[in-house]
Length: 335
Ligand SMILES: [Zn+2]
Image (tube, rainbow, N blue to C red; front, side, top):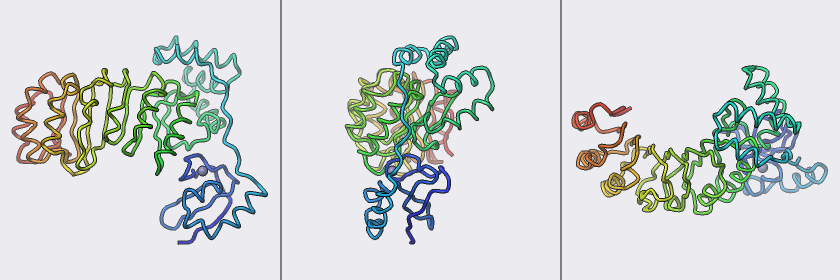
């Protein structure tokens, strides 16, 4: 594989180590042969130590002549206005007050939001693009989803928990994320990450998409109403999470298991948990239910009587029995 140092032709690549955009014209280290993989020159020795080793001297000389550019600076935030908006993020009047404050402060984000609010989406998108580095804090745009100019969905991606923690810090530090709704952490999170989410995420956070692990017992987030987990093989049920204590407002729970079925013990403790007892939607997908697992669901079905809608992927042999038992509120039985 041929690695090289080159100048980024566009600002479309992002660094595999820190997750930030690599600005057009900046030095980058990486390769495109199999998959495109790039690093800031200053991040390469931490991100790809072996491949980078032969390039150290060349990189040091280049960095000495031209240091990596600093990410876009962040503007001062009006925390009080953000707090007010977070209490009723979808109320047009509250939004207008918020937008007016930004405009008064001369924040270009206010102009973007005002254009969206008046239905001028094309102009809003154009202006957004112009200020993108500022509005995304220099992070890769593909990590975020926006709605009417507000960052509503964020993905943090990295190989290490520490880097993820830094990325989370940056996301929570963005003024544009003050009404963030969904957060995606595509690894088994450690305790530090879960505490960070519990303590620092904006009050508007409603959905957490992650991998199930013991650290989720440290989740303390009233207001979260949706939990979606990938469940690694041989997972042990997080006891406190399933008790529902740290997540009193959860109403939707979905689990995906990538064809390694949940054990009957896991399923029993899930279906008998206080958390499941107050759900309005439950989904078990991606081979989460073996034939044995489907039997457990049927055995424990009484506990699911209060749930308005269920979705189970079950082996063919049990489809009939499950369909009959959950008639009228079954959203699906398989792929
Ligand atoms: Zn980097």
